[in-house]
Length: 294
Image 1 (cartoon, rainbow, N blue to C red):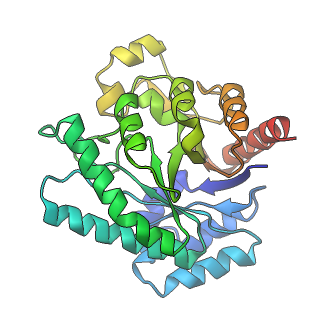
Image 2: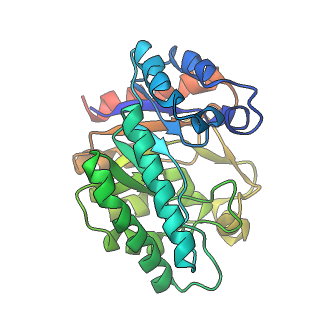
Image 3: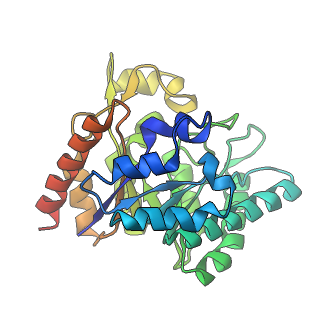
């Protein structure tokens, strides 16, 4: 049966930018949730001190939970090889971070969709960098997970492999036992595409999942697809929402995942409207998991 983790979506500014929340506070809040794990973020301010890494692992363990997944954002599409090499070194440091925290999965991305790059060039640059990291990850028993992502907060351009066809090309380009997909259904809407259509193309490669939901504040999905923001920015008509009440068809998603034997971590990216919302999302997912993995 899949296990649930949670990501502090509502507290990223406080944990990563202004320091108004301590990691220990997030651990305390998460300890009250009916989940097995906490997805970590490499950019928590307190992660800058390596001495904190084993301490946080122990803090989480003391609440009866684990840290299964690391969220980080390498940028592998720089044309300059020296800069790409630095990104590879950063990814290796994040792999070390994951290992110290006791995790098994560490995110990779393609990089930014730089205008000068063709699809073929971008896929090759990203795949080559991922392959450079894989032996390092394998030695530490860490699986690298490629997310169908939208855009890191600090990037100028959106994700190179945001669109379904490019994402699938990159997934196909990396064949390794310590590489898989972190599937995020909501991000597919930001590309103006269908999450279930994407899942059916890559479900056999999915090893972890982000659970979230989006809803339309106004207009229709067709309006969203016509909007430039659907691909190049967070569309104004689309908003985060409580899981199970938005656009995502979790019956179709879990049916497909169950059919390919998925039995791993589902991390919740929710709670932007408070912990009570996050608790309701946990309850919804618990019920669905029991339904599809009885």
